[in-house]
Length: 372
Image 1 (cartoon, one colour):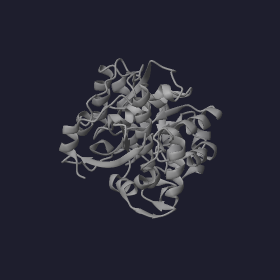
Image 2 (cartoon, one colour):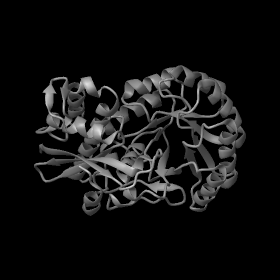
Image 3 (cartoon, helix red, strand yellow):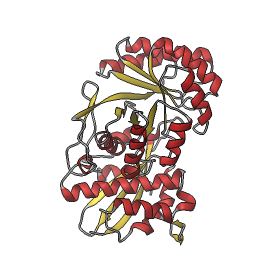
């Protein structure tokens, strides 16, 4: 079996709000083979930058478009192909969008392998730890603390035992920050887990103050309170609070995760399969976290391709903590771009059982939202 085509597909909703909702557009990767088996992946990054990294022509041996590097390769040789992509685009792909682009191709290759062998990806990865996994409803904060409380009650009534709120208006001032968390807790009640995503808004001292204040509301974790490169700030924060500190979605390969774990001393390692190098690299990151006694969780706020890939990965590692599941209800792209839609039942997601990823694109929706 040989790879015959790599397609980077940019899809976008007609109306995109100026807010941190990465489910309003998406970069889908489709890899085709001469055996008639195709696989899909996704990249949650700057879509057109990723598309350029994939579609770009061969320039020289350290700066090549990823598609040019993988054409003609055997899709079963995922480790070899991963290193070929990394070495062949090392100028632009050691971190950031160039590295993210590798993720979509890698995910698609594992999808192909699973389909060819008639097995779900998690079984190929040696997994089988769960039949279902606990998830949390992931949402942006409401525009006001009161609106946040209303959203919390809605997600609680939908059966979620864990809910996360994040980003704006967190970070405007101390009064608003505390009110957002207070109203979220009030809406959830005392029995559910409340997760808070600060959205990179504070310096180290402010983050320490907020962590102390938020501990009064028994939050499950405090996510990304600092800039991603402030590893020393993360270490100080982790050492001075009993609140779990979670981070990692901004990181790329395992070296940057090592900085976050060993220098930043975080408590929960968050990995986005569509940014970290796909399954091939995510398994290594999870092993490094396991060696340090750290639990891992996925990051995924885009389409169900991302979430489905995360479910396979979380079922393949011993230190999976919980799965992010987007609860935002205004994004049409997520609900229509795939033939299957995911639904939580009593706060849990079922592990996929179909061959490959077990999720397929809806071609009509793809054409409807496709930009290029």
